[in-house]
Length: 510
Image (cartoon, rainbow, N blue to C red):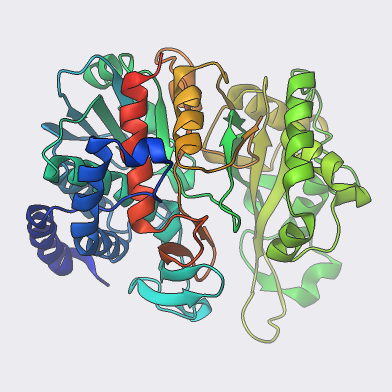
């Protein structure tokens, strides 16, 4: 366990790192950017602060805040607040919620425009036995064709990119340049459990007032592929995370606790009860939800969205994508373009895990008294979380499963943003100046709480931005590229410069 002792030591080191300059920056962009005196000075500061920037990422990885395990949540919020203060935010506060706390900070430079930045300080659980490199040690490893990368839990999801954004702020300050926009920073510690209390942070009166002034908000991300290309996402699916629980106690049949399996001949099984309930949720192949009314509000893809997806399919490497995912064909044997259409269009019902009885080595002849299925439901426009929860409960009741509990742990609605928004225009302009090919993507299949910002009462554009590369989010050997050997893909310094240039572009773009 890292916890309090090492946390205190790291805090002191963070402040020391900032005094060294603390920065890092982007691929040498185009000649237009190279001639920009601001960017030249900021790049020099970023290069000088590279080691401090790298240490900032490593120290943060060494403090895992895991909401699902209630691990280091207080310490994680305090550390996040310290990172914000160290990056120059004048007002920093830890915001209590009914769950784990958030962090809110503002950096006011008296500029005309204000940008919102969303951070998560929590990470997913991990099993060290599954990792080839210890998940909290952030060791540098060679990635053939890419360069050297940090391996650790949270490396790319999301501490590496977030710390790189902070590195841009350090570099601008160290270069003696004025930050061209004001910044509102909002952070949470429950993203990995569906952000159940994040709206409490965003709608706190002073936080809400600050967010409403923003031109838009983004979460730092490092999604360049092996060719250096990125996608600019115009939305993301919503999500509901929940458990379905079948138990002898609630059912009134079967045992209240585990009993000997020989008694199955005369005692009902809650495990089979759960299996039967699950089978009613989808078609026999498991691919399409059949919950009553599930599709009645689903908005079909527009012609523009279909055209954008077609462009992605033509430019992407389908074989490489299959290799990365470890699959040999797409659902229903669909061609790649149709599979991508389905990925953007379709809501899903997915089983994350099934737990009942004994799951250790060998057998243990029991009839379990309870069975649990962990599900995530992905939502598309114009579905809502509230609607989906109601329909799931009504479906189970209608099909004779009123005893099966639905325990929702978190979730949020889908996110949509206009490609004509200043936020998206700034992303495209910044990528273009860096020579990065950017493709508009109607919607990612993943989820983040962007709807907290795009929906009332905040109502601002929200998305993802960032150069650099990483992979393995939620998986063993998660990594974030630090030293790139591929001139098309940004390393730490280059990715930092991407964030710095974005801030200047936002200030200037019409």
